[in-house]
Image (cartoon, rainbow, N blue to C red; front, side):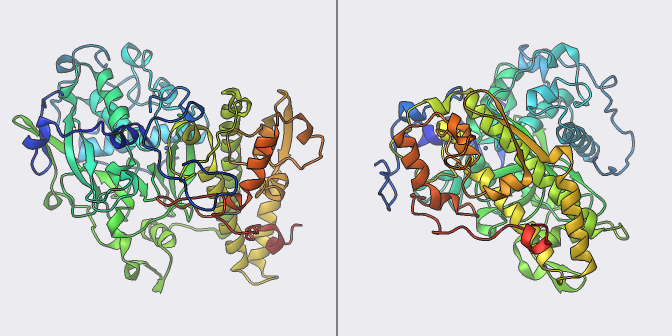
Length: 564
């Protein structure tokens, strides 16, 4: 989540500009006017901090989270790198480098989907794991050209920035108009990221900024996850709720988890499985499979799948398509459990999404699905290895531990947002719970449960399910899936702990002996145990050290599978 604007606004830095007064029903001028700490014994939340973060929590580098076949159409736009149009310079005047003379239509939307799908394949294969690296790679970027992309640098791209930056980049390369909501407000005096009743109050245009590079930088500065938290009735925002059906929900669609997380759909398979690109506060990109880890919430918080509203120029204005112009809008089904039906039976939201997206007759193999779920688990662990190592190389474990935790450990800013892993760790536990529940749904001794057990054993034996982290002494430490599951609720999410504690090294073990530790860190590690025992993330409420069960829940699939 992008917290730079949010934290600035909380300190009183945000004001309505003259352009907001000119904006009505999704139009903006094409050129607008410029313009108490938690103690270890505390059971109650600390007050919100309204001043600048303490030195211990100041960001290190941040200034403030196989595609399916696309439908055919007339005159397809070439998407091979060699055929893509050459771009003007990133630092040339916007008026010449980004004229905005092309209009969004079905053909451009298909090309947008192809662009995202190709990026997604590169992230899936780990060819690239950061956005600017992907865009500088002609194998990953269908719009690559040496004139501009070799000089492209995009830092601090988190989950909320990612869809906007991708849409802005695509619009730049294809000479399309690009406007974006640059402020939202609610009547509630609360954290904008988790407020109700959010409405856009300011809109910006690409023509407001001198160069294309300046546009990208401004998007990163102004956008945060609250931009996605609008209800279906809001037509002057950047998104609309998309119908969950093949061809409508496609690569380039967006999923907003109302807990404050945003992902980009990069693949919709014929069997209904959805894969997404996930952006992280450390700038990394990962590949995720859609499932129960992602919340939907209610219609009031605007969660679910969305598409960008197409835009066009009308005189001086960037105009967003109204609901009446959209053929794939659905303002009800994603939040109406009565619509979640598959094969005549009520199902969960996530099962309904898969059933609704599946092409009739597409084969579905439960054992193959289970193998993919195990593979997704291993991918999540690999991603956690990378995240923990970034905190190690940044030296967080060598700094003094702050004398308080964030008011909410899952949704905050600064170093904690960038380097901690409570949300990643919770998602890992949800994946394991889903694996356990899927196996438990089959009767003991049934052929399918036996197939799941075989799939588990075979998948975790593969090289991709063996891990290596770097300890405090700079030496590699090998871990298996079994090691991770045995330590699941002792692995620390706290970035100020040593790598050994981040991976739950047993006390008194040779592995633990290399930990750079002190009494304060050990006290925090013990105090955070109940927070580690949580499975589900909770946002917008206080999460003191008592916010969690005394004992961890059972999410381990191995006893159900009979493999331990």
